[in-house]
Image (cartoon, rainbow, N blue to C red; front, side, top):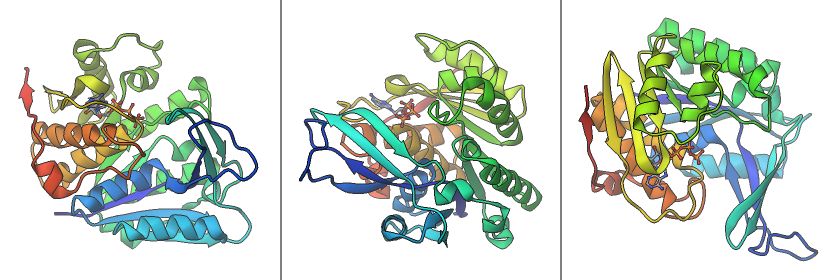
Length: 321
Ligand code: ATP
């Protein structure tokens, strides 16, 4: 099995009590969250060696982030920035379900990530480099850093994985679309929801997406460059257009408690297959199983399955054409 390198921002995460209000004396359980470190943790739980590159503040929340990611078995390369704080998220719950998420990340240490944070040897040694569309939305430095990582990965022959992960709170569709489309075109594997695939193509948002529309979008995105385009279809499952063939995989049925984090778990499951040389249908099966496992429990990443749990999961993909 090869190793995976990823890059991005991770924030401290506070959750309100179930009645959704912060009042004096409220206890706010603290955790961490960030799409790329979520994927890294998911991969580490599946036994894949993983490195996460970032920047955090030289502060208590930076200590928390580094400690938590490291505790999950991920190698952490995160510079401490004495000038900028670690980002923070506040999840307002109502009856246990997320009602609103507040972000306190502008000017954060990770939004100052730059090419100087990128260790060439580390990126050059990876089998897979995983990036998301969140990082280029953080600022010009992170955008340059991500471009540098793509360049290094390309020259080292690593597989470039890109999860579109459009964050409407960070930039408008008009700002995001060309940047995300450029990164997707440079990637080998692209992960997108149907809305995100439409965004890459500069199309209007889609409604009621299913396998047929997902397939059409995947084919269209593949024409822009990537060899493999994976479309995540929530409770329906997922599909991949890969080297001219389409594979569809039905979701693993679960009672969904908290779907947040399913996308990251899916990517971790899929990539765990890809680094081990598994064929696309098996990668989709692993992705669906990991996504379903996370939906079934609260928390963004805490419920990521282990290798044993994932191997025991049902589900298979079929080649449709
Ligand atoms: P996120 O909420 O993390 O942003 P996403 O929108 O990126 O998720 P989804 O398509 O919602 O991604 O979910 C990713 C994968 O997780 C799906 O392709 C599917 O395999 C699995 N999944 C999601 N929701 C369900 C569900 N209700 N039941 C079973 N599996 C699910």
